[in-house]
Amino acid sequence: MSTGTGVAGAAVRTPSGAPSRAACRVRGLVKAYPGRRARRGRAAVAPVRAVDGVDLDVREGEVFGLLGPNGAGKSTLVRQLTGLLRPDAGSIDLLGHDLVRHPERAARLLAYLGQESTALDELTVALATETTARLRGLPAAAARGERDAVLGELGLEELADRPLAHLSGGQRRLACFAAALAGPRPVLVLDEPTTGMDPVARRAVWAAVDRRRAERGATVVLVTHNVIEAETVLDRVAVLDRGRVIACDTPAGLKALVADEVRLELVWRAEPPLQLAEVAALAGQARRHGSRWTLRLGADAARTAVASITGGPAFAALDDFTLTTPSLEDVYLALGGRTDGLVKA
Ligand SMILES: Nc1ncnc2c1ncn2[C@@H]1O[C@H](COP(=O)(O)OP(=O)(O)OP(=O)(O)O)[C@@H](O)[C@H]1O
Image 1 (cartoon, rainbow, N blue to C red):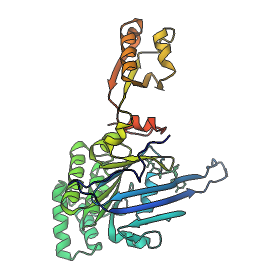
Image 2 (image 1 turned 135 degrees about the horizontal axis):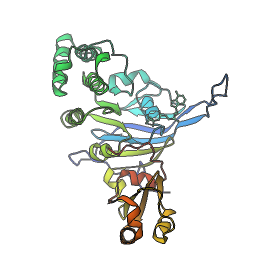
Image 3 (image 1 turned 90 degrees about the vertical axis):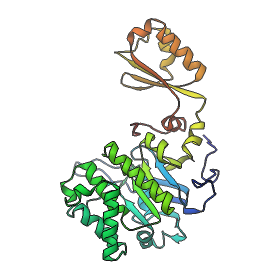
Image 4 (image 1 turned 90 degrees about the horizontal axis):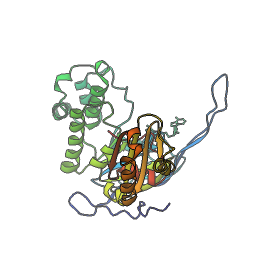
């Protein structure tokens, strides 16, 4: 399916409206993991092209998202962008530096928050933040100043003297985020930064990201499988499925692809009454998750369906129904992606 929203076609502007340069330019990126034969009771693993010919342009000063379900290739792609994983093929230009030839340069250009960050576990929150700032070249007094500023910004002062290993999952994630912010870097690469966080911590993270973009012109690459997050914080988003970019545009631009559709969700009390003609008529179009049916319909068809289901005997079998305007999840479905791993909260 052609979406007309590919990398080359997407118009990109900074928040002020001015066109901006590419901070990161990726062409033909590939990473394949070899398979493994079944051995000594361990199941065989099929080879997988985790990143399968990806082209991307991330502009300076934008918050650019990589959205996709579990296993889509997001983490593999960002580990390549951060110089931690060597691509099998393709090129990565980050702020004018060839990261395939010089992966060691990534550390000077970007701050990376990976999914698992155990390296700092034995340090206190304060020391993890200060040490990161020192490692990034700040003199001692400036690193202490940076530590205090970042911990204050994220509301972490009370946890400053606690080792990361003794924190809750969400607190630990926020502390790792604090360390990632310590010492300025023009590019932030954040792999699911808000996993496990409560709403207060999430807000602190997005405010801090926004501040770095607005005040310092930072470029942010953000991995997420949370469609709500994607709709609210991203300037543009590349939708990944099985290692490929299946669309790339602003969240609004992507949603325009399905603007003439609505989503109808029907939740049945028990088995859906397929003997009823109005129910049977919808069965073929529904994606089913247990007793929940999800249908993408044109507005008129949705109205007719709701009227026939709620106005007849099928209504008694219904536990709940909702009609909603399209979300990025619907875009994802329309593009042929799998939504099973996408988070909607
Ligand atoms: N070290 C590895 N060895 C073999 N296969 C791997 C390895 N790392 C990832 N894969 C496979 O590559 C594919 C992409 O994985 P990746 O972790 O990049 O996806 P993801 O989109 O980040 O998923 P998630 O949302 O779960 O973090 C998956 O099929 C995964 O099983």
